[in-house]
Image 1 (cartoon, protein in one colour):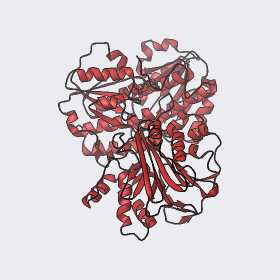
Image 2 (cartoon, helix red, strand yellow):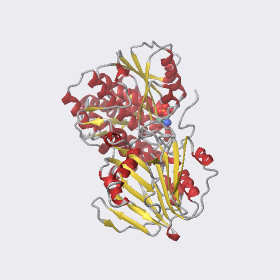
Image 3 (cartoon, rainbow, N blue to C red):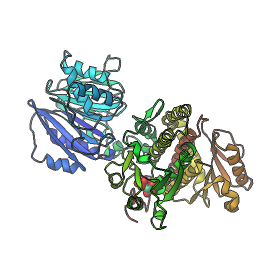
Length: 604
Ligand code: AGP
């Protein structure tokens, strides 16, 4: 999730921009930059890595007096984290910063290149400033050129643009990515992606809506809506706490990240889902040449994503698929054959065990692929190929949106390989894509669902343990639900294939044993139901999660019927995340930083 700041005024513009970017560090980034326009001169500074690198680069830059400036922290989605790819991006006499993804950037870039425009970066963002300057040549005013530019952009964006042709004005636009305007004394104007950078500076704020655009100058604030009607700004007051501002009103980062899953899954799909197929422009199709097996390797929640995806790979791509726990693979003297594609999955890209297995695979001469949330991480730099999830920074130690975007990428990848191997017809692929497109709506958290789970959680604060049970892909989801519960409530829980109950575990059944039963309607419902009935017949306390009413449940969380079982998977994933979180809240635990755990396990 990139971060954006902007300023119009006569106070210390550099400090205001850098301090603002510091307040946005929690959004995650891998490069940063600022551009300041003062007395018709632009000053531009960019740096890869931590913000301190940018602070050092600007140490001798201390402008005084009136200036306008924009700043940006970049979380790489298109193009590696380099200074060239860092924002702001320059045209001839304008700079732009952008948060979001321009879906149609390739066609705009090709058109502008055909007119002789030279691009310096690999980013989608750079097309904005060149397109603006293209229109500047023919439109009557810079604002008309800005409006015309917006009219050609598809996708999500929060944009700030400054230009020498109007050196006291910042143009802005907001559509799908956050942007707030802060108003202060002495006609100062501030911009930020969230409240935190504005606290202590702005007196009042304007929360822009999707489709809003306009400009600010020392004496003006003009906002227009997507119908080009002038909008009277609605002023609001700022929260007082920066930390609560970073959580954007949620109680915990984990809660915010569960609610963000719909948006980040949509981001992860952008540019990859076409109407009749899946496109991973970052993958060379030759990666799969000579491959007869896929071996996944990961830890923890990422392992659960791997395990769930293995069902999809064998079912749709008809390719032999195996799944390994990294800490086990390291020492079992595995058979690593060159016709195996070795796929590591990692949110951080730094997990020691997983990283070591990647080295083992490379040493054995296997082709390697990493599914990762952090560009430029050790695994991304080491693997032959990488597919980035676009979850943005995940601050909650208990992984949620990273898992959701891993599953989204892996489902798409199974279909992409199925296309290449012709194991699914075009019609079957289209049906899968139709289902994929519904995932973001399936993971939307409703107040009704969250309140139901909050109320129900009070009954699960004791007992001698939990079974989370499911079949097929719902077995790895059961493992994930059990892990979520363990790591933030410290209560004992096990994930189990529901068909395994009678092979021993059912001996534990009694009213103090809680069974969380995943009972999808669209996959093996009757089989699962009979397994759950075995437990309820022996008086285990049952919490059933299903679209189908189940009269033997002590608690029942109703989910929706869907055309595809994977949509039930994603919906039940949210239920399990919220259940673990609400039980943890009732137990008074630190939801975001549970005891004994680290966000990234970089040691054995
Ligand atoms: C997930 O909730 C845990 N925090 C943990 O299991 C995590 O998934 C595991 O350590 C792997 O981390 P990675 O995805 O960054 O490699």
